[in-house]
Length: 130
Length: 167
Figure 1 (cartoon, chains in turn blue, cyan):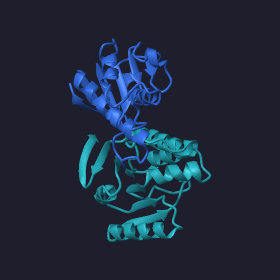
Figure 2 (cartoon, rainbow over the protein chains, first blue to last red):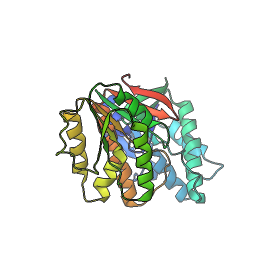
Figure 3 (cartoon, rainbow over the protein chains, first blue to last red):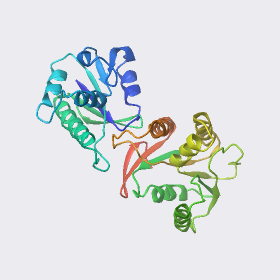
Figure 4 (spheres, rainbow over the protein chains, first blue to last red):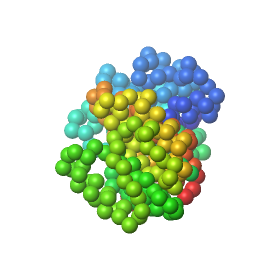
């Protein structure tokens, strides 16, 4: 399992498609895929938006966040792409705070289980692990 | 050579950019894209001008549409900054196309180029549709330059992380 992270719009998906020679059809989009099918393809991008949708639907609370990590790690998913969203001012809005925290916890867990972690900076990779 | 310098607010992006541009001999051009009408902008501009004093820069304040600038007599061009150029195109009577046209013009015509941009990628908040479009357009533009740049530098409070090439 390969984890690719980086800031918003840093060309993470383009990097993954090119590097691993896959097409966008092989990837689920966390922004709008069927939630039950999130891990059904070779990879997923916009994991942060999938997590946001989970929270909005009340499927994730502070205690059961590892539920989504297990869902990912028990699947055959090979490539996971997620925005880094943990910087900046702590949001006043409770939902936004919960969202940031949840993404941080989940991605850190995925990162631990991934064999390779790549951070993309405007399209340029830095290998953080593996 | 094309240098791209990004980083957060007050991370010494400009200082680094000016030091790189300053290492070239000959006349240097500084393109300032910030609007220069408000009091706050005027103060910032004065501060930057003072920083560049004695470094042999010609300053050109222009918000966008660079095609008319003759770059042939300058050994190096410093653009400060891409974030303003992008905003000027998106919100001040330009277009995404025009934004890339300006980038391409500098890449093609500057003998050496130093581009400064600011990093707005990491807070995860959803702003208005216009702001999201701005973040997307700017970062796509920065990635486009990064692909063509010889050197890509991230500034972190005065420290440098070199993501591509070297100094």
